[in-house]
Image (cartoon, rainbow, N blue to C red):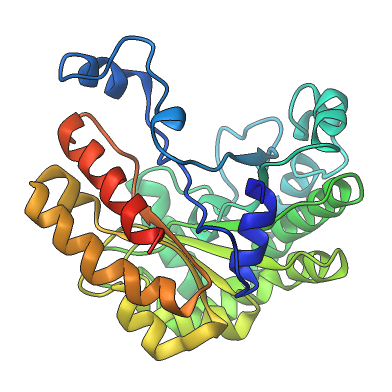
Length: 324
């Protein structure tokens, strides 16, 4: 099987030749540090360990041109809508025609990043805008709903534009919504303001028969999962999590095969020692693999504080466990 077939078979609870494995996004500065710890010059990690290539197709979901100030009232939304035109040619990646030609014969996994989530869509980039948006949820709920609907029109239009030209393996909604103890808004507010606004985007994905719809979230969003499932998502990718709240074994027991899983391996174990890595892999990964619909992966980007020796042990152990 190639990477594309392997991922699709896994997400269908089928029988892939092996479970997919995606690189965690290891940057050059990490490789430079590892070369002082034993990584050979010019070594290619994808050749050292079995890996599956994954590409994220990233469209521009920001207002164009970027606003100096984000809207706070309904009278400002007409101008905001004009900045969120899905037909703007600048929204597609550079080299679009060349990419389309290359994707026709691809063997790798292609994911489309379709939405940036609630807070980024509302322009939250600092504490001032965050506190403003929280106030608007209470004082101007209609404005918030209208602003999210405009963002959804952009996301749905762009998704339809892309999916008319290329087939994908998964659509990804990125949702940075949680703190370490809980989400920053309640499940009821999340349903009312966010999931409702996603429906036009989800309708486009259903029309184009996108099978895997990923909720990629951070920290602790556990209490949102029932709402997310009800809203039409079928895959969780939790990053940089509160490991007690977001243990994938508990999540699988609670939500079963309705929720496919990507990730789930605590990155902090890789920072510690081999015994911590062994416990993390051997206790978590086999039961999830046995039920299927699971892609094991560290729950965040591997950084310079992960020793090369630990990373090698982690990848070797993961290969052994996943091959049974």
